Image (cartoon, rainbow, N blue to C red; front, side, top):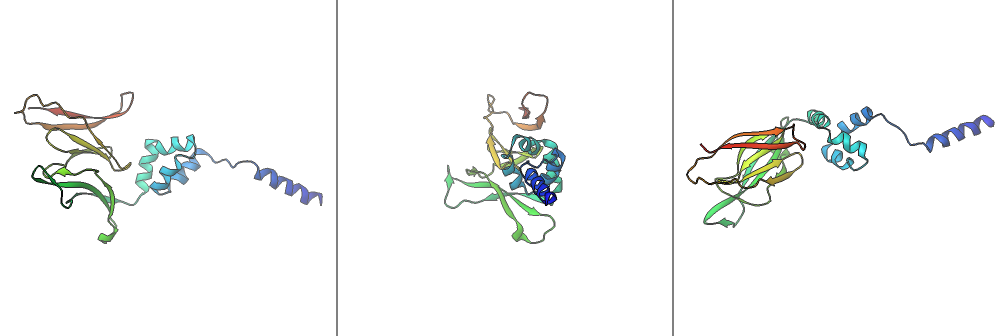
Length: 187
């Protein structure tokens, strides 16, 4: 009888202690979850936030996902006109490479406002961030992983006759806050 009571006491004592998993084990578990769950689980604690925002974790998580093609699509909105010319919406869709079924295509993100037809060109990409040219002097960044868009400040255009060409779009690691930078030459 004493032995059964001792076993019950041990079980109760163990049940009151929170389980501890090594950080590597937590990382391995989080790597196998869908992206939506990983984003949600960032709020669990600071350790999980640190794990799930680490660039090495994000790269490993992306490698484990099934391969998908990112489709850049123009959508024609109904009844919208801008200064006499038609406008389009920019949307990004994904389609699994392993599937021939077009119904598996899903809308990933759509830009919140229409752009003039003839603009909205995809110029470049860097570390998964896409650079679009909206019109002659404005640019749009899109991060499909976070589903966020950002408009860059308009570039000065002192010389109206200059022909602008984009030369570079890159991730600048050495700065205090890592940033994407673009270079432009007006020749």
